[in-house]
Image (cartoon, rainbow, N blue to C red):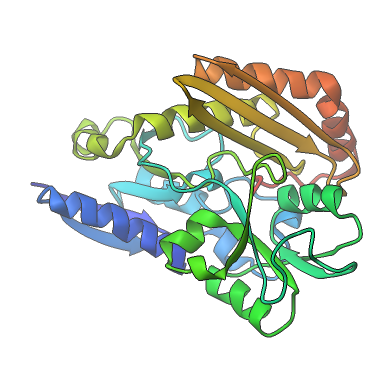
Length: 311
């Protein structure tokens, strides 16, 4: 059996994820350590994610540790991982996926529809902000950074009337009771890869690949490959709010996706179905570009030099 070192961010959720993979590997008889690595995204905490111009802001330093042989594998939230990863690395496993949807958390209100006019809603994501403004342009959207506990504490103290978070993170941390409304993809299209983990290794490390191969889940691999192919067709990580949600229905892969102006004034939605995940993702991405997404991309890129990884 092997001695394996996992690289992870130090947040409560990231450590849950790393310990989850650790436990599965230890069940196979391996000895596993976790090394906490601070990323750019962890250091910059006082700026909204949409204003931070660093691609791979939650993964770059971990990948560097992998390349330098300081760790043997990395555990990421897949949605944090850029569509283009270093040539020396590969995603060796995508474990079974948790709920990919977003949720509304609030102490007073049961749904987006129930929020009063000018309610303060917190979110760290331009993707969520744009779709929320499209649904309820009367709401006041405010940046929200910090770990899950920090965000929920700000809700409890009345700083926000509601916050939008990922269902998967709350499920993993045992905080389902905070959820007031699960947002279906036609209301709030999730981020590509949301709810999924990525186990990244050095491409040349066939031994570690053999150790982690059992973690790979075919359905999670297929749906996220489709979503990431769409995201990649639109330019990978970018400041334009982009959402993608793929699922397998009766053996057929279905994809819905959105691209929007950050202010929510224009939201383009496309969908499709097929058998090849990459081909379907690229086709739906092309449809988005052709039906107005390209115009939105050019508008945003023409007005800003900031190109962050889409949260």
